[in-house]
Image 1 (cartoon, rainbow, N blue to C red):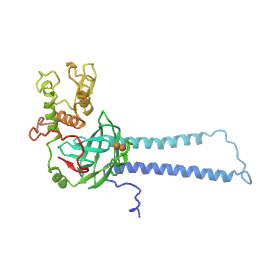
Image 2 (spheres, protein in one colour):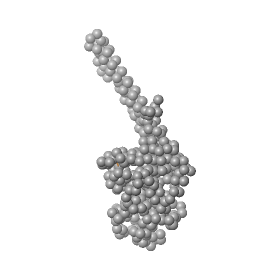
Image 3 (cartoon, helix red, strand yellow):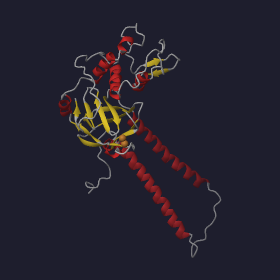
Image 4 (cartoon, rainbow, N blue to C red):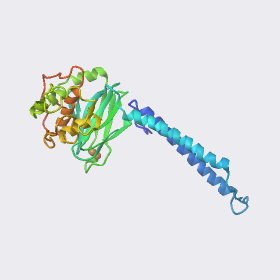
Amino acid sequence: MFDNFPLWPQRASSMAGNVDALFIFLLIVSGLMTLLIFTAIIYFAARYRYRKGVPAEQIEGSIPLELSWSLIPLGVFMVIFAWGAVVYFKGRTPPRDSTEVYVVAKQWMWKLEHAEGQREINELHVPVGRDVKLIMTSQDVIHSFFVPAFRMKQDVLPGRYTVAWFHATKPGTYHLFCAEYCGTQHSGMIGSIVVMEPAQYEAWMSGGTGGPLSATGEKIFAELGCVTCHRSDTQGRGPNLQGVFGKPVQLEDGRMLTADENYVRESILDPGAKVVKGFKPVMPTFQGLVSEEQLNALVAYVKSQSQPGAGVAKANAAVTAPEGAPGKGNQVQ
Ligand code: CUA
């Protein structure tokens, strides 16, 4: 019966069931409350009606009544709060060892780059049953990455990274929408997530690439001359980047922070903002000199320097593909 009139989008991620269960619970609680209120209104209106009704009697306070209408809603709201918090944090925290995909939004398209090097426009191929982490930024205005079948929605902002993740549970093709009004063609800023069986996915992945994103980043790192200061010995004018990503960093002003994607990004675009202890703010800014794609590659490279077997994949390093949109929905090579 509901095949032609589905009440919910398909459930195709590990989060979908959790989100739906909470939503249905809220729907039932609100429904019961509405029913209770309207039943009481109708009952009292009939019972205490002006003509032929029971004369209304004034009540001056009732402890049991007041306690129950305070404590019962409190209990219900605490359940909603705790349940919501658990679902929220689960949905917000990408599991370790997720496959990483970089997303760059712009008016009006989605550009996606796999850590392995595949580039796509308005289409994202992922394997079923694996955690996928999206590291997203925008080239212009605020967009929002929305996949109803995954019950996943995350704003994509210019000037910083936001993160989202999903674990697809069913092969298929699912809608991707932009869920933040971003200009005249906002409604056309759509795409699809193609969830494939692992074998199919491996075949798709082997279909040509310019090398891993981190290798592209390494090439840019050399071309921009970063490598002359960020040397792998301790003699450089900038900190050695080996093993830095994901670790705590002590800053010149005494603050401590964790080197994450946003920190690396800021250090490239605004190097003076957070200088590492023991170093001078001598690095020039690369604001306007690197595209979002090149930034992503640099971040992927710095990240790769903290993985076991750091500094791999020198061969096959290709220059990042030029700016501009190839055919819609095609894999870019
Ligand atoms: Cu991008 Cu709406």
